[in-house]
Image (cartoon, rainbow, N blue to C red; front, side):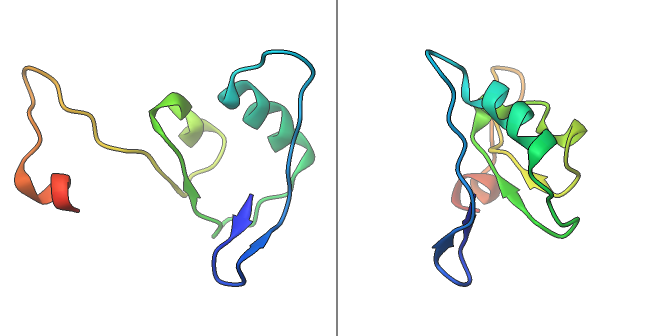
Length: 75
């Protein structure tokens, strides 16, 4: 976890062997106390992170039926 305002690493989490990032997040979430205002910026591998923390942002995904408009692309 990184605090961008202070430019400091707040915490890290390691696992033994090959573990998916989101599984590590779920394990570390139990041990780390997140302030409700802490914003989580994650990639698309973290689908479902909103169940653990309400203040999170994931990238918008384009599908064949729902292409992205110019606004979200440059957003």
